[in-house]
Structure formats: C-alpha cells, structure tokens
Length: 328
Image 1 (cartoon, one colour):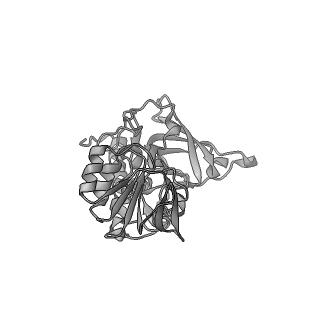
Image 2 (cartoon, one colour):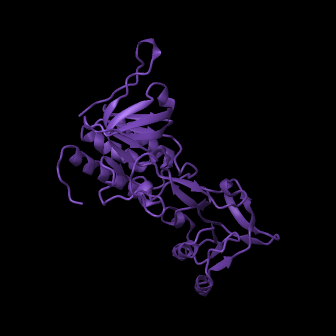
Image 3 (cartoon, rainbow, N blue to C red):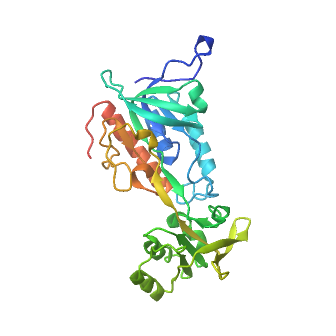
C-alpha cells in the first residue's frame, strides 16, 4: 500500500506533488479518528482532514464512552491524535478543510482527487486517493432564542442519552422548533417528571400530543421565548414574551441538523430525504470507493456509536482494498 509522510516543500518553495494514499478520511471526530486508527493498524496509508471545528466544542464533558465517561471532548481528541502519531502512514491535516472531491477515471486505481483549503493547503493543496471516508458530521443551528449559546454545553444540551443522567429529577426545559419536539419530550421525561416544553411560537406540537404530555405532567408553553436567565453557564429561568418566567435548573434544546457535505456536489451519490448519505450496514455508499461513518450517514448520535461505525467502516474498506468479500 502507498505510504505518505511529511509535507516538505519542493525546491524553490513550490508545493510538493499531490500525495497518493489509500484512504482520505474527511472529518476528525470520533468516527474519522477511529477509522484512521484501525486503517493505520492495517498498514493503509491515510490522510485525515480535520477542520478543527467539532460540533461538540461547547460541551465541557462527554458521556457514555466506555473508560472515558466524563472526559472533555478536546481531551478525547488529543488522546486520539497521540495514538495516531504512533502510525507512520497516518497523517492528520489539522485546521484544514476539503473544498471539493473530484472523481477520476480510476484507470490506475485512483478514484478521487481531494482539493484542500486552510493550514495544510499551503504545502498540500491536492491529494489523490483510492478511497474516501466521509465523517464530517453535521452543521448545527440552535433555536432562535436570545442568549442560548451562553448556556449551551454547560446547562443546556442536545443529547438526552449523553447528558440527562446529570440532570435527573431537576426542573428541565426542552426548547425547540422542530416537529419531533413531543417525541423528544417523552424521552427526556424518563429522567425527570419536571419538564416544560417551549416551542418558541413554532406550530410544532399537535393538540393531541399536547394533551398526552399534559396527562403526564409535561407542560407545553407556546409563547415566544424572550430570553434565558442565569449566569456563568447555569440557566435559571426561561423568560417568555410578556415577562413571565419559568424557573428551571437545566434542560435540552433541539437544534436543526444538516449534513456537512458541500464538498460532494460533484459526486453522484445517493442521499436520504434529510440529506444524509445512504450507506449499507458496512458504510459503503452508492459511489464506488466512497464510504461514510458517523453523523453524516446516520444523523446525530453518541460519540461511542460514531467511533464504532468508524472502526466498522475501516475493517470493511481494508477488505475491499484487497478484494476480500465481506458480509453486508
């Protein structure tokens, strides 16, 4: 397999010829880093392109990752980078983004050219590769509520499975503007009986759902949210239009999520109704040589699930590289 090392410039300061590798992993989150680790152990040459802007950057602690429960996300990434540094054929391009993935004629086994921007693009503007793993995750848009980012990741969270344990039994808010808000309220009620749903005036909770939630002691507040009160990241109340306050100790928000796949506009690949890449259970997309793991294919999920998908895709990809059939 083809190895790649370093990014030294050619004489005269010109960029070096485009590196040629077995795999380019686009995305440096749990799915991408897990894939890179397992690919490196399989002696594949790998470039990981990491923009350095993880969706969970605001989160102080990550939960549910076996042996690392409660670890800060930034620390988890640092540990992963240290482990990857032990594999000479794995290279991480930090603070770098992919601007375009271009298909080639594959006559020499090289299916894709990857155009880069950012820090590493000064010396490596282009990479040629046999395969690509898309692990870029999601773009996240929070509800249109003043001050929400002051509390997000500290006392307001998006993942109940990740963070509800620490909030169990407390007075909780659920703030969102999406049609699945009632469904999320039912889930969060598993951890606390003291829950208020705030729709911020969006018509997203049906009357039948509101009645069912009310029967379970869950209030639905439809008025616009004027502000969030609290200090130092700790929310204390949701302030409604007109000045009424609902006291809370913490809670959850339902962001809008959109797959981060702008660089694939030139690739003919199947997507679902929400824009996620459609894959088989092994992470293969409809485009030969293109794989996906993590949120880009499955939607928002826990870190350990994304990491597991990355490991699975890596194993399948290695078998595909050597022509070994694997079960779908």
